[in-house]
Image: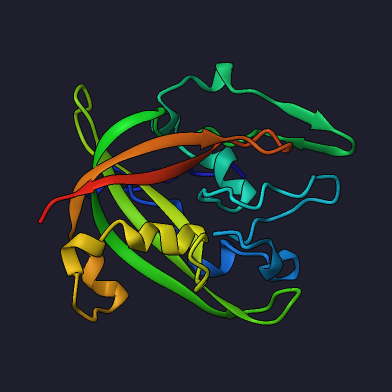
Amino acid sequence: MALKKVRRPVLYGEKEVSEEKGWNNVLDKNNAEEGWNSPIAPRQSANSDLIDPDMQHDFFNEDNNVYEPNKQRNDSVLNRTISFFGDNVKLPRKAKVEQGNYDFRIDNIASKENVAGKFGPYDQLFITFSVQKMGMEVPQQITIPYIVSTKAESPFMVFLSSFKSLFQGQNITINQLVGLVGTCEISHFQPASGDVYERLLVKSVNS
């Protein structure tokens, strides 16, 4: 029986795959390690290396890379890289946006609480940004996961520190960041798996 391919709707920029399939598909609890002081709890395969502890990227169920429409990647499926490692065959994830400077807007913040980790449960936030720069017809959405940490050098606290001047002398909740706009720098990170993820560094925030 032939399978019917259903195209996902585009709302404001590109709708995140993770929102459609639910946060349960985003995280593999068995491989989460709070001790890395990492902003994410990456999905690890049996033959993958430990990921750089300061990495900052979004990640999805591996199957999503296979079924995403071609225009989402701005590339022909004929040019997609196929990786053969050990017994595994995969189509490595490509970054959704190029490296460089962008305007951003925080669209949404979701949470995954009491995630089972090697050193005990922890909380994780998924912050969805719309980013755009000159030459882009529509904003592009990316989601950056952060492990909630009180350590000043953690990626989460570094991110929050970007808004210090805006909220000096105030107490806020994380949801008050939704709707804020500013500028950012996006860089890429590529672990041994061959997947390419985005890191986002806030450069300025509009008051």
